[in-house]
Image 1 (tube, rainbow, N blue to C red):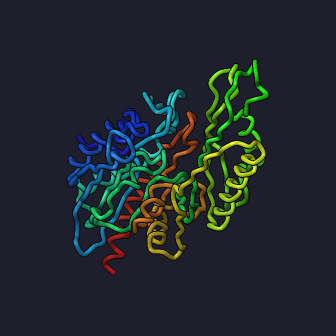
Image 2: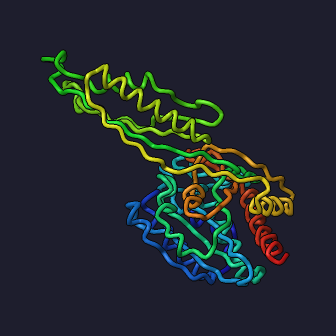
Image 3: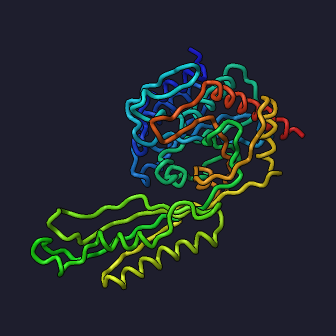
Length: 372
C-alpha cells in the first residue's frame, strides 16, 4: 500500500520516541526506508548517548555525476511524549491536550519519507539522497555528536527542523552549559543552626547576582535546574545548579561565562564555603551567507511553490550545529510546526503539504544546478 504524507505523519505521531527511548521509531524508519529502496544502517551513537537506539541512515543511490544531497531530521521528542493521540480539526493537527504532538520533528521526517515514496514510484529524480535521522537531539544533539561522518557520502543538505513554513535559519548561536555544586555545612536545624552553612541560602545569593533572561539581541542566559536539601530539620549542605549561556558573539559568550564564574567566586568568599564549577561548550554557532548555494537553492524551491523565503536568526541549536563542526553543512528549514515543546503544539496539514512540495522542488533545482 502506498502511504501518503499524512499517513506517515499520523503513524509516527503514535509511536513513542522520547529522548533515549527511540527504539520503536528507529525500527519503524529502518523498515520504511528499506521498503522505499534504501540501503539502511543504524550506528552506535546510543552507546555514547545512553539511549536504546542509534541514528538511522539511509542511502539512495543516483547519478554519480550529481553531488549527494543530505536530508536530516531527528527521531526523538521531548516529554510528555508517551501515548500521543493526534486530533484533526479544520485542517489543524494537535494532540488531545495531554501530551505534546511530536511535529518536532516528525513533520520533517514525514516530508522526507513522502518524497522518497514519490522517488520510488516515479523515479522522478537522479539526485543521490542520504537520509540522516538522528536520536537524542532534544537533550544535547547527542545523536549528531555521535555520528561518524566519515561513513556519509554527502557533505551538504537540509535539516527539516525549523518552525514556520518559509523560514530558513541563517544564524544560530553558540551555547555553553555550566554546573555548580555549592557545599554548605549540615547541622540539626532546631539544635544548632548557627553552626551550619545553608547551601540553599548560598545558592540564593549566587542567583541574585546572576544575569538572567535576554541579555541583548545576541545573548541569553538561563538557570534550568536546582537540586538540594534532605529534610526540613537539616541545614542543607549541598545544592546543585545547572544553567546555560547562548550568544551569536563569541566575546559576549566568554564574558558571560566569566560573569558566572565571578559570581561563584564572590559567594564562595562571602560564605566561606566550597564551590565546584564545571562547564563545556555544547555546540558552536552556525552562520550562512545569503549568497551561499544552499540558500539560493532553497529560495528557488520555495519560489516554485509561491512561498517567499525568510532568512531568520534564531536562538536554538540543532543537528546542523553539531554536524558543521565535522564538515557537514546543513541549512535548517521550517516545517510549519508551532508552539513546540508544549501541550498546545500544532501543525496545519497545509503546511505539511507545502513542506513536501518544497522538498520535491529542491530535488529538481539541485539536479538542474549540477547539470549547469
